[in-house]
Amino acid sequence: MALVSNESGNDEIWLSTIGERDPVQLTHNTWEWDQHPSWSPDGLSLVFMSNRTGQRQLWLMDADGGNPRPLTDDRFAAWDPVWVK
Image (cartoon, rainbow, N blue to C red; front, side):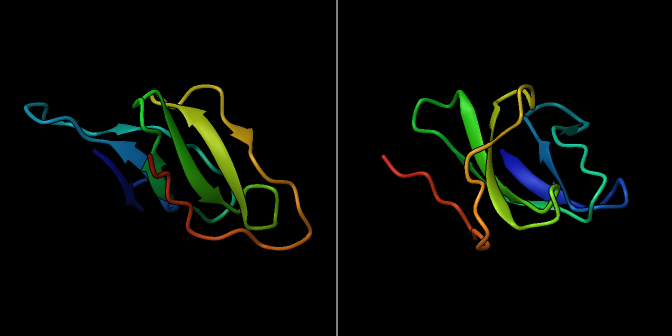
């Protein structure tokens, strides 16, 4: 399960697995937040909303938090992604 917590000081995306005690922090944003994670249909990626560039945009990362990359780069804010099959 991907969730958002501010345990580390900012809103960050964490991964919690049933049967494991401690969630794993997937994002490390020096700005205020990464939010609204949504799983890809194959479970290999997460799309999320971030302000890490100073503008609210959509980002994509691998399921383990690796390889974060911008999905949008627009002058307009991008909000609340939902990945549907």
